[in-house]
Image (tube, rainbow over all chains, first blue to last red; front, side, top):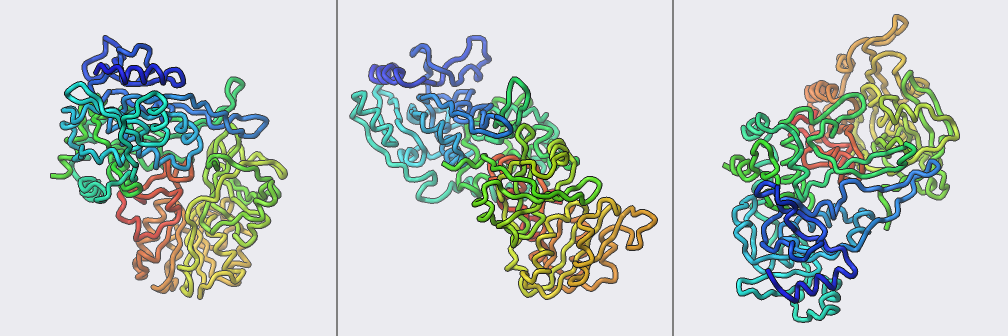
Length: 329
Length: 273
């Protein structure tokens, strides 16, 4: 997409914001893995294809390692917020869905909220990209009203005729568009993460089927193949498990939050030796259960946005779509 | 915005060695107003921590009816943090977050016989219920206590057993007692032999998962319904507020939806006990 108005907006924003966007990260990366999220140094590197980049926005929303407290004289003092102004440019609908879930999960988390306040969310879509269609985990509904149920400040759609359409999804978005002379936008009022017609029906049917499915052969099959490497949990835009870690050495005295993974060997290990997730089968079931049962029950939202990153990440070729298909047969 | 991860300081006002590896900490929040307003239910827990050593969940060992002045935690030295805690002295400070979890809803126990079954150091969360019963704060018809432990050295709250036995039925059994032990020897399920437990009883179980399996089977023989069996689960936890996922079981979080569950609500969760 070459659009002078969008390019001007990016240049204007970069006066105040660090601009992050999907970009090709390196020439030597294997096909399918070459795109990720990084700071925009050259406007021409931004990927406007609408494809789902392999890298995701999680690092911006929930840093891999986040200092919560400084440890001073035996007291935990809240660490100073390090929340730069970041414009998240070109978040696709699936990643906006992941963000919308995070907004529910971290609603009472002061660290997330402080960081979030300084993020400007600029969604982007090329209409109905073919990429989305092949991801059949959920029956995505790409009608216009999808924008009413995802969180964003500004949304840009590029159309086949080369023109763009602009939407605002928040007061913050409106102010920015007005400020930079892009007044021809349509405002979309966020009407909550769940559609008026109720929670996703496919989500409900998967949850029902999965809930008591531990003895289903699909998990035995995955048990044989999965090597519990945890790559899927890193690639997934909705995986948000974390550990709290204290450090008390001269170089670092702190309590931090770190990404965790339910595939880690100590994820459920307690002092005394009891370990709930002591087999790969239990771990992989736990991972699917969180996305397809626990999150839907808790937030009425799917815990999987259907981005396919876990399938790409998996070194033994486990395909989330096929897992769900086998389960639903 | 309130920081859910910010602990507050509590002072150790007294310490009592309960067993070879367990100490009873009596704690008061250093902010007197906060302590006065501190309230919890039996079965709830706090995250107790030491800066630099992390936090761990510990259930209340004392009755909420003293919570305006102090609260008690029985801490067994089993890991790094609890090892550090066990070195502390009267007057030292610890970090506290909470209370967390649902606790026991005493209203559901009303007017029914109450059966408490505790195994090992899992017995601790039952003490608030016993204290409340002895202080006439519980509206139960009778109280039966079944307590199984390894040996005399690990038996908790020994000084209180005589008073418990006056107003309630206390049954203690040790797995590997010394030759001086005059009481019963065996596993906790052996205690149920020749004991009348009425089918309308409410049973509260706290102990290791293996104990649950055998005790539940025993209770089922007495026609106690799954709805009337409560158990408290112990899991790894970090956040305490149902986000970090470490304590998730099926659709529930032990930190938020538990740690107390009705057996009927969790019995279908795979590998639950």
